Image (cartoon, rainbow, N blue to C red; front, side, top):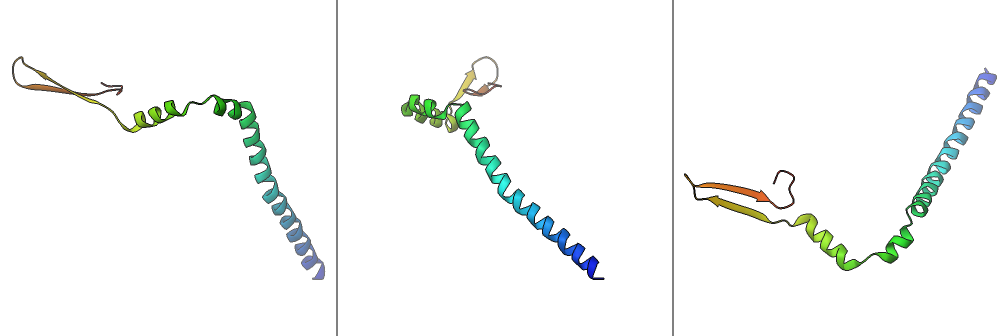
Length: 89
């Protein structure tokens, strides 16, 4: 009976060691991947070339849009509404 308890204890200790290794390895792999991405996409060079005035315009364009309403004078009153930049517009 003692051998089975020792076997279970050894298996549990091995499993705990494996879990600790994974707990350290996963964050290290994620950090290494993020560093690789930063180097591959040249984040430092891009940030030096960035123009913040253009960024503010781009951000403003992401939530603002123009609505064009057109009325046809032929026949019944027909209106057409189009949103600028819309694929269907």
